[in-house]
Length: 173
Image (cartoon, rainbow, N blue to C red; front, side, top):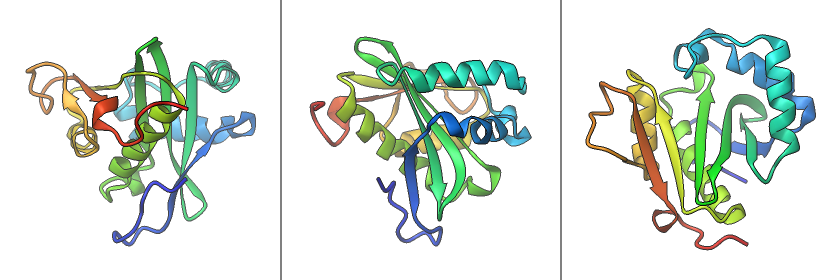
């Protein structure tokens, strides 16, 4: 599945479903200082904690979808979805620092949402963006997300939402 890479001089960007053998790669990306700075917890995670979390996510694809973001064969990020309830999924993305600012995040978010709307019967996808992460807010907005409330997303944490109606792909299979 291509996340659309044409025209930005960055090569082919793809999403690949993560498997059990990808735990270390995801761990290293998650604990990179750049990722930690923008994570919800603001802290690195221990290997044991990550290994339990990762095994649980990969084992339950009806509730969790985890994708590696690859550019020219190199893993440069992680995109994940989790069911929050029967009608809502949460989305999380992190990219290696060298991949940020090239439009990759927006394309990956858009393509990932199209995938999840095809696979799950959710009506919306929600992104929780921490205060100060303006690049993330811009990427989600460009990918079709809108703020849930009237809060100024650039200065305070916010929830951004994309509905099935705003996404290509229609009903799940």
